[in-house]
Length: 120
Image 1 (cartoon, rainbow, N blue to C red):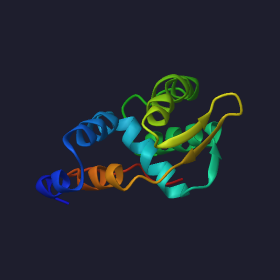
Image 2: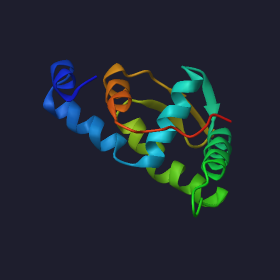
Image 3: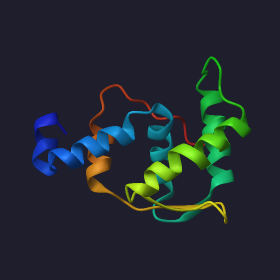
């Protein structure tokens, strides 16, 4: 979808919020992984493992440690996605459920040259 079409789909404030959410590469990969799961509940440990293996198999120069990635998900990425209504996030239970958002998905899908991490 082209940028002009995106503007027709959502208000400027919605577009700004979506762009803020997808500004981080790791968060884009997280969104991709969550979309792959559909609306099924998954564990944060499972997401950490999948993202970590994906970054290692993609040949990233310095993939994060598993612990560092878990900290980023718990304290940064998942709370931000939850604040915008993209996920249901329960840090005490360690669970996440993706809430499909067509506007966000349109923005993610419109990004040029973006190759998601391999699904593992």
